[in-house]
Length: 203
Image: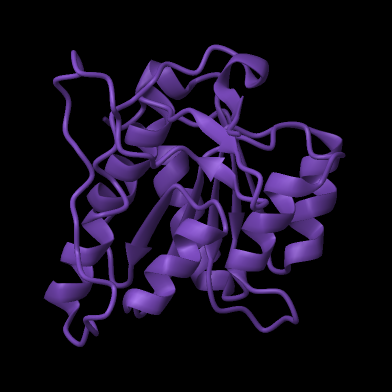
């Protein structure tokens, strides 16, 4: 996967307030062959960057030394009318995930959640997934704007259905958290050709 020409024209944004972690994330994405990787230590700098130029993927740390965390930034990216690409895939990095965190990830329009510690291969696989097989995005009357995670009702659809887990159950172990996080990623994929074609208004 390293140096793959698929990513030669792709750009990424990295947010982490730990300089060492930013360097690690940048190195992994650069190793994949990303054309540019812009790294930032605070959320507002990411917003200003994305208002000035588009990016193909964002990797955001969840817990930041800032008034805005990674989920709030993800929501800003989705809803800010000045953002070039509000349907850019967003991967959030967290050191701990329970049901509440997973529900927040979904509600804030996050595409993928990855837990620390993770390997370069783990992050590469997530980036590859969101770029090569992008989701469609929806807006709903309740105000949600993000990846379409609705269960497909097409009788001819033969792809995977969303995994179910009881949101009343607490997630106490890393293994359980990883299984619950897997519930974020079973959606069938609809090719995203443009923002206009990818975003659906849901009555």
